[in-house]
Amino acid sequence: MTELPAVEVRGLSKRYRRGAIGVRSLREEVEQLVARLRSREAKASLNEFFAIKNITFSVPTGTVCGIIGRNGSGKTTLLKVLTSITAPDEGEAVMRGRIGSLLEVGAGFHPDLDGIENIYLNGAILGMSKAEITRKLDRIIEFADIGSFLETPVKRYSSGMYVRLAFAIAAHLEPEILVVDEVLAVGDAEFQRKCLGTMKNVAGEGRTVLFVSHNLAMVRQHCTKAIYLDRGLLKDFGEASSIIDAYLSNTAPSSNGSERVGDDDLWMQVAIVYPGTRERCSQLKFGGDYDFVLKLGARNSYHRSVVAIKIFDQEGNLISVLESLAEGVGQFDIVGQAKVVFSVRSLGLLPGTYSAGAALFSWGEDNAGLDSENLLTFDVVAATVNDSYWPYQKEHGIVRLSHSAQLLKVD
Image (cartoon, rainbow, N blue to C red; front, side, top):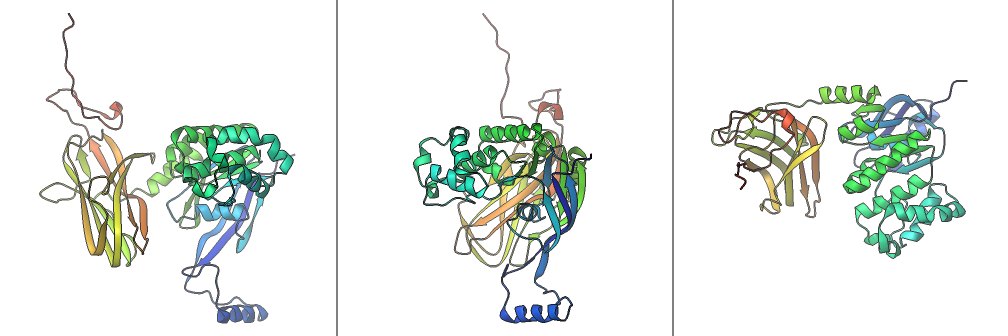
């Protein structure tokens, strides 16, 4: 007898309204009611959009399945529908087995209760009995590894401590299906390794993992299948490595300068130029001098702003961040247009292909933000240093540390 898939999704769609998600006026409610009474659909509001639309796939039991796509592609919405946090507008999702989910930092916790009390609360929400939680309490505490903070109200926890405790509970629920969003990104490297090891064990025991991540190297290493979402649509589904390759190919950005991201209210744009001439360049020379330029525009004023340019390798691993605050620029106001120039001298990136993204955060009353990856791509070509005849190549790694070498006599 053929085993049914752990996750089966058919024609799944979720629609929201911009500016008033989940809220309808009395007039709109009456229009919807009249339309239903007349057995026809009401005309869709121009403000409505599909976060996910007509998604169909199935994940076999025992599979670690990654979900990839740009910000806003529908990854988190899909997980929320699969875990019944929100209901679909169309289609259906069948999840065969108990679900353990970790989607949002702090979800399922009461801020005024301490860690132990929240273990029981969160475990109950996930479907564990009190006796089951008590039996597993020591293992949950050991896995979370937050020490004396267990006796502290969780409202004083950092994001990393929230995630430690939440993942420890979800992992020890022993679910048939474990659903994990990008929240693991707030944990330290050691804890991430522990979580990834747990997910591997879950799959090894014949259970299923759905895992959202922007870290493509992590998805390639730990996932056997992958789902690629693009603007709410299922772009591709299959073996993880081939899906990641397709994603990288489809999202390859402009090599000369990025398009604007954002909207008329707030936007940003990235370019790499030669100092002095300001001519744009897409092929950089190892050890060369370049300016990474972030151009900003705003219809209104945005206060106490901080910006950064992020450099990624081909697998999506974050290599470096050029940040205005760390370089002493400080917080600044955006009125109309602004430009931040990061001057990189003696480029330390070793030969290879890289991409640049950007982030903008305003901590004033407006509290705005933009965060985009893959705004442009660029190549770094080989070159020698210190009059050496032997050039640095791709095989030397990713970054050359600033250093020199000398041969000393040994007495």
